[in-house]
Length: 467
Ligand code: 4AD
Ligand code: MG
Image 1: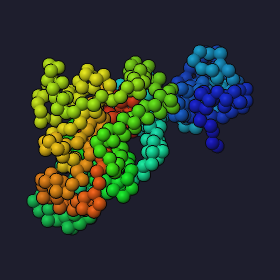
Image 2: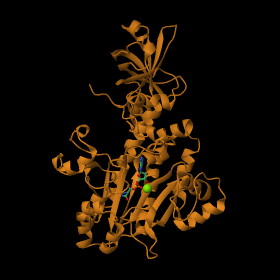
Image 3: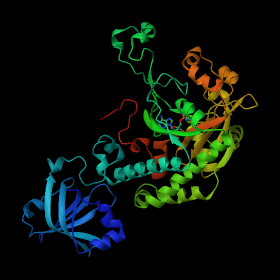
Image 4: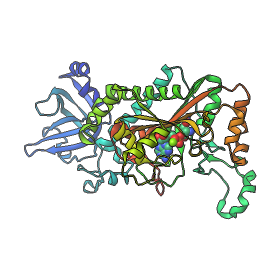
């Protein structure tokens, strides 16, 4: 039988008041137990609806008390009883159990991998199917889901259309060659040199990959529907073993027509602020948990983001700031070189003490589709940097002029893959812009969780695709 979410009894005052001293039922998994010598069991039950668990008080008079007093962490149960005001500390209400039905016991409780004690995140990463039963991973999952919902709502409320761009593609959007190949050919049987000729025999009749970004396809839809976004998984075969990189991550990519870099930056700022406002208003229990357990400054920092405008710094000025800072950087700071994570973090953490939008990067370090500025050496690109993470958004105004686009596409191979993309400039081209927001970096920022592998349910990284 369907039972109400435990959260309702704990946080919804009207719901709670209506059911006080009434008979109720709940279902869930046991988080912890205390079986007193006097013959009363206190059982904390959680069903994933909130960080808090509800306390069930089971007296020895219950017919199956001999089973109840053996209940350990992880056991699944169904409880019916009376919702009463709690005498104990830490909760307003508890359930005086009339019936406790054990649905699923724990095989060898002494070997249960996530028995009640503190585990390191590293240890839990080895158990992606069980770590979700801990407070931290439950809170991350709820915030992730709620933020995804907010993002869709934000776009719908602002006249955007959600476009489902393909996961299998034949183009390399970023031109960085970090592609996973999709093929049904038995490559082990073939000599590498012979492969190129053989794609005609392959499933798609051509070389195909997992997408690194939905942007190029989103541009096609943008240039008919004006305001679109994609929100889906993207894949990068980059061998980066850092706390900010995944081989499979989710990206939110809006694309707006009749728009320039300034409009793009304004959208990025408004979207991030709307998400943070949503989390502060709607995820307060989980946010308080992260603020207490993970990062004491978290809620204050998020509130601070709402208070001021994002700082805007052209790349050329950013280089000057970094040079003048005499910061002890590992990587060189020179006009023309890309900003490394340490430089990004300096700008957002030490210089601006909040989100920063760096714009107008040298053309040679950015992708072919970014619009060339009048100076001929920079492009209308922007990265949004936030404290603790560095780059959370990368975007640009797109090159809408066919001749300049052609001059930016160096490789014949890419040119031949992109004849359709050139069509978009041949047939009714308009200024347009867009960006990609990394969903897991966003979740890391909002929760204060240091490692991006803890911000996605089943992380994929070099050497790891567990489960
Ligand atoms: O800066 P990136 O590479 O931009 C693009 O892919 C553009 N096509 C987006 C667009 O304009 N529509 O990636 C965008 C964001 C980054 O700022 C970062 O937050 C995230 O995606 N990202 C990653 N997140 C986790 N693991 C990785 N390996 C990531 N690579 C990028
Ligand atoms: Mg980028």
